[in-house]
Length: 133
Image (cartoon, rainbow, N blue to C red; front, side, top):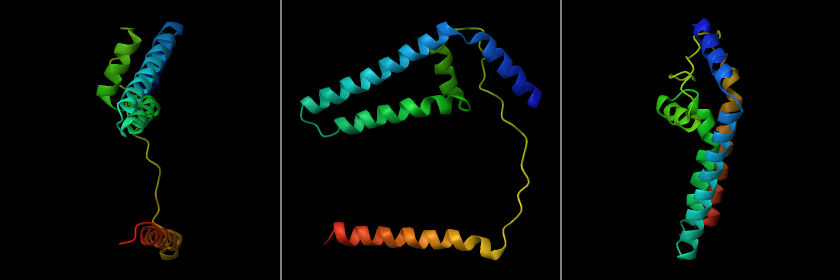
């Protein structure tokens, strides 16, 4: 399986060049300008959702390159943006290497339980003080 990952990586790196980088950069810039434009249009019309629309565009801007590596529909969009037919048609194969995992002793879970209780206490205080009945 690691051979497939290596072959995929070699083929991708051999066929990804300046042209593809420029196309992806332009598509990213257009995506951000589209988000700003829609956000401003909503803000001008008086809708409060403009900032949330921009937040969605910003989140997708940063998550897209991460999602492309494993999710086939996103990888298909990525290939269409790049416009290079020589780039692999499937996303990178998954690794089958598994790290050994030993169960923790009972006291190994205490810090997690402690921080969970602290989080719940902080949430309770915030809800009680900032959202009175």
